[in-house]
Each structure stands twice: as structure tokens, then as C-alpha cells.
Length: 281
Ligand code: PAF
Image (tube, rainbow, N blue to C red):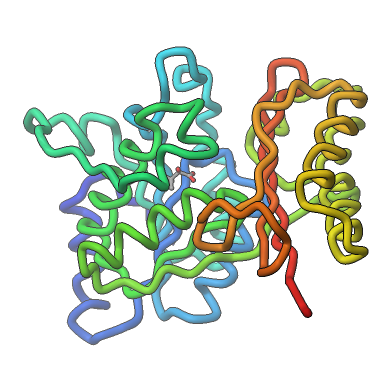
């Protein structure tokens, strides 16, 4: 496995693969990797000849009170994990390399789907994601790009971006990887205290209960309210509990497939999760 830290170096490494029309798969990450990321790489490995993983903590997607400075940078450990799952090239540029060469005047805004759910609490976040993902797509020029469904809204934003701007890339959403007790894997789980870690799977349990309640005919609004009560009783501070169609349209009845979204704080840690509930009449 190679590690490249410059755009030029990465191009030199990828040019032979491009020339022989090999399928390039790309997994963008911010590092501090866990099994969820590794599953994205495994999916890429199945479909592609060459697998590139980027590790870049993107400053422009963090708000002023978010954890950019403290975000764990664990390149050496991440590289070991990536080598084990068959990554070919790690691209780990500096902030200077990505943003430093000239002032950036271009912004990318993907419209109303970014001003909903997590976008409401994190203004500008998805613009920052859209810019860095576009830059990375242009640098890597992959055939396929892999994103986790845990960040369902991010995945929807990137699919929209790729469609709107005719980027010749297949965006693949990979199902959420969960711990045995159901907690969705996330770099932020590392911030939880021992007690909070025991409470955290309540999020998934409430989602599964909600799925059963919906299939038993309970009204969507009642089901959302029950989730709120259960999470609050367990000690969470709820940010949002929402129901959307898979394309993120607001819905108020369970008469089609629905995605249930939760964002809630446990102590200082903000956790998100979602569950897609199939409608079958
Ligand atoms: O999901 C992430 O880790 C980041 O938002 C991404 C897609 C790597 C862009 O910085």
C-alpha cells in the first residue's frame, strides 16, 4: 500500500491505472477509522481494481464551536487497518495541499436538502462537505465512490451534487455498521463515558421499536413522540426526531417507505442514527 500526501504524487500513482482503464474506487474519510469505514473499503475492493482512501480532516465543514482542533488524527494506526483490508493508496494531504495554493472563491451549495436535519444545527456544514468532496473527486477521478448510510443526509447531498453537475461517478451508499448492541459505529463514540456508552444503544432500540409500531398501524406522529419520550427518559437531549422519504421529502403519514432520523446528545457527544422502514400495503 502506498501513501501519497500531494496531488501530484497521487496522480503519478494513479496514472498507470487510468491509462489501462482500471476501475478506481474511492472512499473519502477524515481518518480515526473504525469497522464502518473498513466496510466501505471492503465494498470498494469487491467492485474496483484500485482502491484509494483519503484521510483529510476538512476544516471548512466544521463550525466555530465544533471539534476540528481536537478531531483525532491517527494516520499511522489508520494506515495499518487500511493495509489489512486491501486499500491500494492512502491519500493524506495537508490543509495547505488542499486549500493553500490560492484563495478559494468558489462555494458549492446543494440547496434545500442541506437546510434540513443536521444542516439546521450546522449551518455551512454541507457546503464544506460539497466543496471538499468535489475537490477530492477531481483529484482522484474515481469511477465509484463509497459513503456510509449512517450519514444519510450527506449521502443524499453528494448524490444530488453528482447528478446536478454531471460528475461521471457512481455513488454507492453502504449500510450502517453497528456494534453488537446496535449502536451505529462512529468516530464520535470514542467521546462517550463508560456509562454513556451503555446508554447509547437506546437510540437504535427506539428506532427498532418505532419500526414495529409503524407496522402495527400506529400513527407516525405518535411514533415520533414515543421515540422522543423514550430518549429523554434515558437521559438524551434530543436535537431532532424526524421522518422523511428516502429522497428527504417531509412526510406526515406512513403510506410509503420512510426514513426515521434521530440526532441527540448524550453528555457532550452528539450522536446520529437512522432507520429505513419499508412500507408494504
Ligand atoms: O463523512 C466524512 O467523513 C466527511 O464528511 C467526508 C465525506 C470525508 C468529507 O470530509
